[in-house]
Length: 127
Image (cartoon, rainbow, N blue to C red; front, side, top):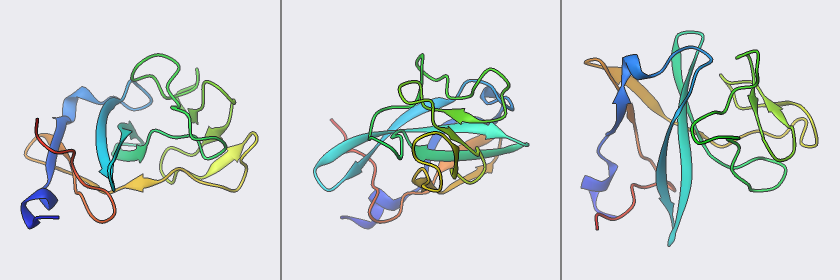
């Protein structure tokens, strides 16, 4: 994979993410597959994960970009009801208790949220 593909990728403006609110979806590449991912804000910080339940690899959001439960305190799988701590991705309830979402590195700077690609996750090829 060329070094340039490991450049930080802008996901959204920092003000587009509200604590416990809607997230922003994006995709990453693992080997030859593109996999959905998302970033949300919790307790003032941005957190990004692969959009796959730790129980069965299905997307979490119940509506596009909606990952939090009704309280805004936990990420929730719409299919299985598994609940996850938004800051660590650890499953705290449901069929996958003790497992975790796959966390992706992010940073906030200059009013934006960036994903920091690192092996084995890369940006999809430009089309």
